[in-house]
Each structure stands twice: as C-alpha cells, then as structure tokens.
Image 1 (cartoon, rainbow, N blue to C red):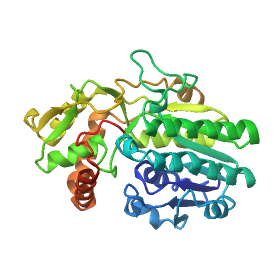
Image 2 (image 1 turned 30 degrees about the vertical axis):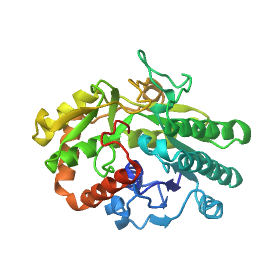
Image 3 (image 1 turned 90 degrees about the vertical axis):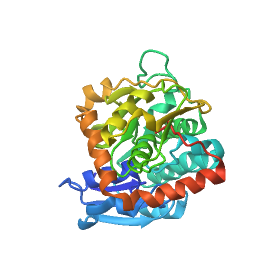
Length: 338
C-alpha cells in the first residue's frame, strides 16, 4: 500500500485519515480526490500539506476519465467520498444515489481495470436500520430507513459484488456516529456546540430518546487504517465501541461542556423515519485486526468544543450558509443524524 488514493479526503473523516496515514513511513504518496462541495474544505488538511507525499486533486468521483487516470497510479483506494447527511437526502435523493452508488461503481471499475491491491469502502451503521434491542453483526440484514442509508447500503453491496465477481480486493467498514474537530456544523454535535457558543438555542427531536453510538473520528480512522493494512478482501468490519447516548444524554454533555443550561433547549416534532436506536457489534474488528477505541467521550467532547471555540472563522461562514440553505429548502433546525 505504498501509493494511496483517498476520495473525499478534504471532508471531516477523510481529512483526519489523510493526516494520520501520511505519517506512516511505508506510505510513499497520498493523493486526495475531493470535489470540495459544501462539506469539503481544503483547510481541513492543514499540516498534511507540509508533507511532500501529499497531492491534492479537485474533482468528482463521477468523472470516469479522471478517476481512471488517478487509480492507475496508486496501489490502494480508501473511499470516503459520499453525500452523507440524512436530512439532505430527503430533498435530494437523486444526488445521493448518483454520488454514493454510481460514484462507487466508477471507482470500482477503475480499480478492476488497474488491478488495485486494496479497496476500502467506508460506510455507516445506518445501513442496518433501527434495532429496538440487540446489536448488529456484519452478517445482519440491511434494512435502511432513509435515502442516505439506502444509498450507502447499495454501494456496500456493489463493492462486495466486485470482489465476488471480478476479484477486486474490496473491504467495507461500517462505523457508528463520528465526532471531533473539523466536522460541518449541520451535524448535531458541531451544530449544538456552535449554537451554544453563540448564545443561541438548540432543539431536540421528539423527546430526545433516540440512541446513537458516538465514536471519536480518530478511533474510526485507526479502524479504517487497520482494515486497509490487514483486512480480508470481501469482508465487512463494524467499527463501533464509542459511547451509547440518547439525544437528551448527549445534549446534557454538550450543555455542560459549553457552560450552558437546559433553558437553551426546546423540543420539536420528530423528523420522518428517525430510527430510534442503532447498535453494532465490533468484536470482529477487535479480534481479527486488534481494533480498540481509545478516546474517552468527555475528553473528546471537550477537545471538540475547544476547537470550535478557537476557530470561529472556520465555522461561522458555514453557519450563515447553512441557515440560508435551510430557509430555501425548509429544512428543520434540529438534526439527529451523523
């Protein structure tokens, strides 16, 4: 894996992964392919640009000619690029299907033609759908509830089919909800943090009873790297092990972290198809790859809030754009997705 192509490498999780992998002595080059949509920012890569290993290419994974040219010069592909926000998928399902399904196929076709050594497709626990009880192993049926999750489930299956049919050495990772610095403020943790730091109110869907597992982005990236290096082609790896919290419990942590009180919180009607609970079993990645999450939630949230406190120039313009976008599309203020 000397030459790694990272799609979506200027996004939240992708940029953390690039900054991690570029430090490895056995990695000769890292190329980031990112179209720099509203959620991708070249500034996220930061100090990675100090490395002579890094090349940045602005482009779309639907551009078959560009993808083919890049893939043939690399030995591994780590595929983060995706439309990833649940609420946006309600009004733009076609864009999610195009990027997440056809874009993944475009990368896999190029990987097949050029005999790539490893293809890691990064996905989500939302493909399993709601679980009133128990946990989902990698063999659990896929029962996505919303267009975003359905598009990711389809792309997972396409990646695995290219291994079975064409021998493309693809692995799939499915992580629980990530948090950490650099995340776009449409997602619930940075949304709440930035609003609370600005003295604005926050809102919770329903009664705040939806359960999500919160995994620090660095722990997810460690798992993705483990799959890149040692994962078995054709296999799926759940990457969880963070902290299970209801929306209300998460809000309580964020209020405390930001020095705010419950007076800043109001409740609004639940959004459509808001799955009550997700839960994944990550023992396979632990047993086969030595995957172990290390970040403590309280420390991770404090670090995250501190980053937003110190970098208002990074998120304030995004908040203004987000408010304008919501007004145009009548999107709800409270978000409970990734």
